Image (cartoon, rainbow, N blue to C red; front, side, top):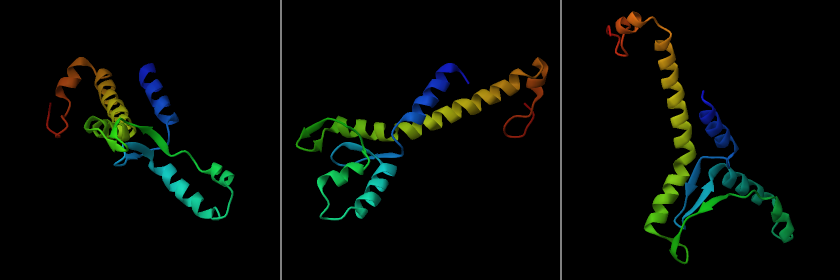
Length: 126
């Protein structure tokens, strides 16, 4: 794998846990952290001091532009959708690049005339 792809993979490993989702307020959240937050919050007594809530994980990944109050702009909702899907999309693309490079490496290692006669993906002769 190239250094650039390794760097992308390493950055992806360090981001806020995903999958992510966005809400109607144009905020993007980490689904695993929201689930963790909800579970931990249930254990905090109602009469606990505010400091007891400091143990809750940060769940917000980012916010996108809003029109007024908490209503997202049209572009903000589009951006939130792209941002929320970005980790899964990047992971898919990295896997696809790896798969295609492995396929290329396979054919690169064959003698020049062997690649022409190798079976195609549909099982027929190439």
